[in-house]
Amino acid sequence: MSFDKLRFAIQDGDAAAAKTLTSALVDSGSVPAEILNQAMLPGMSVVGARFRDREIFLPDVLLAARAMKAAMAVLEPLLLRDRVPSAGAIVLGTVRGDLHDIGKNLVSVMLQGAGYRVVDLGSDVEPDAFIDAAVDEGASVIGMSALLTTTMTEMAAVVGRIRERELHGRVRTIVGGAAVSEAFACEIGADAYASDAMTAVDRVKAMMAANPSI
Amino acid sequence: MRRLIRFAFDDVRPADEEVLTRMGMPGDAPVAPAVRTLLDDALEKIAALAEPRGVFQSISKADYEMVYRGEGRNAAESPLELIAPRAEALALFVGTIGENTGKEIRTLFRKDDPALAMMLDAFASETTNRVAEALSRTFLHELHGQISAAARVLPYSPGYCGWHVTGQRALFAAIHPHDIGVTLQPSCLMTPLKSVSGVLVAGDAAVHRFRPQWAFCDECRERDCGPRMASVRS
Ligand code: B12
Image (tube, rainbow over all chains, first blue to last red):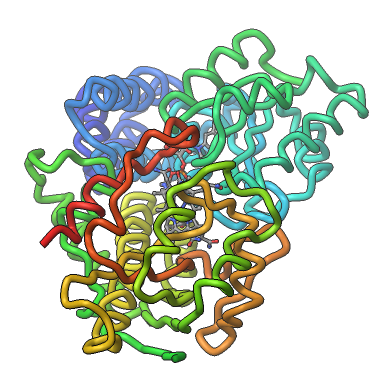
């Protein structure tokens, strides 16, 4: 069976078909890592490119992500069994004092779609909890989200604690959220900023390429 | 005057197009059947879960000036400094759709249904904005006969147009919206998340008019002041 059908099912956001096709590929003896790398990830990559070119819109991307997740549910235990490494791990969370998590959740969905392992700490996350999780999980990138100008200042506290704990350079930071800007990211010494989830994937890719694990 | 109002969902239901725009879809983009299904599913959920309610309380111009000043962190010059003194009436307000929709959004994310979660979130945000509009309409209705026939009401919020978001503290100290279940966190964030606050300003179209050329306009992500001003032109 060719990988194309699965790739198209993901591109079209057809979760039921994606799940059935993945199971069929596994049953017919396809190698799990190849199913991931030759069908699923390329499918999501096409979705990302179409979104950037404004051929499709956020709901379509999210339907594709849902299909990707359905396929991953079949594949994940097999990838673990085969010890196939993920593209890298990233710790994500909404900063202390903030509860707005929809933007962070979207970033998480897109990063998973790109093959990253996301350690999602939820919202109202203490500065040291981000860093502890990065160390424990071997994640070289911490992503932080905030909604308001009054809560985004917490991002500076995390960047400061990374320096104090002498992890600077080994653990990188990326920040985002409605009130956050490139200028603010620069001001607090964060390593990157992304205005949306797609750009977040690109930035994380670049950071991971330079520094895949802690 | 203090009024606590519970709205029916239909009184604050946003149009489908507004929800899709919030989802980043251009107005003229065709809506695929799968997206239409998401919209319908989200509508069914929010109609069952939302508890739209709000409170407003009249305030004198002098008292409002104190609330507006807040913690002294507003922009040096801002439109509300010109608008409020010319208003025919003012009222502080807080509105919300309650906590249930937010809980369902988080559950959907956990259940790996980001598409429906996001559609419901967009619906919830737009519905919350409609609560502020419904409060504006009720305030205008209550003022009938006391202000000019040309007067229209628009809501203005801390965190917008130079009114610093820390202004929330003075606003909450003045209005105490416990009766609708909204509380202010030390970070100035309101819970439930889908809540809005601010001042309802009654005045004719000229009172609400300003040129969006202030220092902070560059950073604004919303840029909806044009349509807002247009909406009160009769
Ligand atoms: C919808 C909305 C609302 C809704 C819902 C809010 C919610 N939290 O659910 C309602 C109407 C309730 C609302 C209320 C308020 N809002 Co509001 N709101 C918005 C709006 C229009 C969109 C926010 C949103 O949900 N976007 C959708 C999500 C998916 O996007 P996102 O969270 O930004 O995430 C994306 C990116 O930021 C990025 N990203 C996010 N996190 C991360 C993390 C990483 C690591 C990376 C790389 C990227 C990344 O990728 C995400 C996906 O693309 C923004 C303006 C804007 N256009 O951004 C204002 C905005 C956030 N609101 C603002 C304000 C001021 C308020 C209020 C305080 C107003 C008031 N007084 O009532 C309240 C506060 C609510 C509260 N609970 O305290 C201001 C904040 C400015 C400030 N000074 O802090 C904004 C920026 C508008 C403005 N003035 O320009 N709001």
